Length: 230
Image 1 (cartoon, helix red, strand yellow):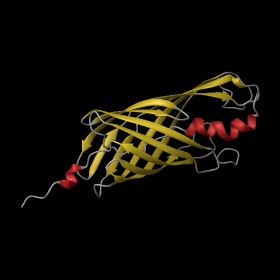
Image 2 (image 1 turned 135 degrees about the horizontal axis):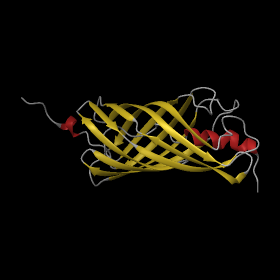
Image 3 (image 1 turned 180 degrees about the vertical axis):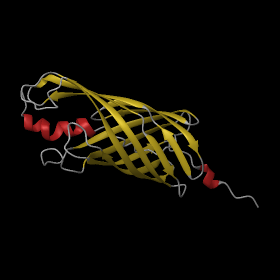
Image 4 (image 1 turned 60 degrees about the vertical axis):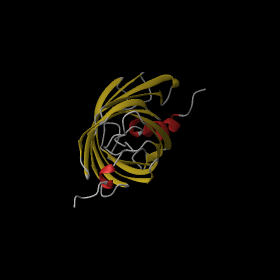
């Protein structure tokens, strides 16, 4: 059954363009080698840049596995499916820096033709993350990213430029700010907000936010347990 184009324009397009942003819901510090963490988040658009209507709320799930002392692997499921690798190349008691290159893919129906004319969306990103650790239980972090997006879709007789292009590339600059509060050694809460730069498919910059719950392995901040020398 063919669904109304207004439905896709109001809900699917915002999810497609912003469902996988610089939001990481994780500090730059990696989880310990051989350990696993699970993150569930609810996120969505906080602005009105699509025809005066807000975007939808959507869930996200992330799995992270520690591969080495400063490297872990992430797998994500949500509007996009993807994987990334985080390298925590600067690690001190109060400051961490990491880079997280990854690739993400999703398949969306077209506005007018429903599931008969899908759009393939691929995203390449390598956000740089800066983390500040004021205490053992709290980390403030900032992500900066310029994601490369590629869309491939069937021709749509009802579309308007630039959406009529069968294949299109564009770069979406993003800056994310978040705070992780480690409630217990195995549970953390992470609210995060990302500013998404203007793209050929949007009239203005947007705001994308979410709240995540992480359980299982957490990054280790044992430096805070060390006693100062006498």
